[in-house]
Length: 393
Ligand SMILES: *Cc1c(COP(=O)(O)O)cnc(C)c1O
Image 1 (cartoon, rainbow, N blue to C red):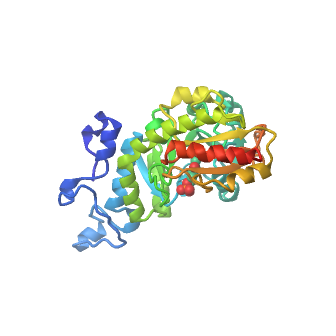
Image 2: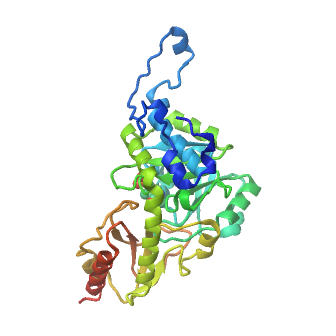
């Protein structure tokens, strides 16, 4: 199951085809089998006393789990990866692995809301204090660092609001002050942002999104650089919160086509964002690859592509009732949380109620849109009809 040494010299699409499988060890079959199991049987007393076996017990890993861990480690150019049963679980693992009682943590105000909740509730109960910061703070984050600041959590771009952070500036400050950095890299995936190469210590991906790609599973990954890998693995081993074998198998399968899916998401996302920018009902498009997005310059610096999720701000004249009229009657776009699957989604959102370090005042009601794999003309027609309902026609 070990990755082949020549892998890193190949193009990412070749790597995705090869990672985490080894036909010679699989009776020639292309894909690895699904190992399910708790108990591992040892042949002798000596072997069980010294745990002399490649695998010791289900919670400590299986070939299926290891295949996905190794594949993700290679994709991220990391020292190691642990898996979690959800993206939120992966964020919890990453945060538990760097913080301890008495620490102070800096968290971007644009963070995924359940992550914010985790910090407020569990982490706070374990004696970790939290300061939320403006996602666009850049090197001025230095001013927020206290003697007990242990880590900075970034999310890039911000959930729903899409601010793109100055990863390089924040990492430079963190490294100078001896502080760990964690990023939620779910939107870009390692295909479009190689965060460890930028100096990030721990990177979290909701495998639920593009790696799974079909809205039929939950998965989280945390990859670490050399310095942070031992603590991350130790935290994972202590908790034994791991995903099921079927879900690992499905994410491994998802990896084979992930480059095609995210590239398609990119071109469709850009086409739709540009089209929406031209509609009179839309006052602003928040898409990291477009100049109107807060922190667009940082996207230019640190990212090699964009994906299929972005937001729009509606003209200020529209009311909540107008939005209800639009969204309640969409034919192809459906409403639901999550994204990264094959289906197009649209949801209303509002960051005003929970932001603390910044004020969310976009100047109109806001919608988040995920572009799926349906025909673009059909999708635009669905939006044309929706915008007419928005106008009350
Ligand atoms: C969905 C999401 C998560 C959490 O993933 P789950 O598997 O749903 O827990 C974390 N971060 C971001 C940016 C997400 O979009």
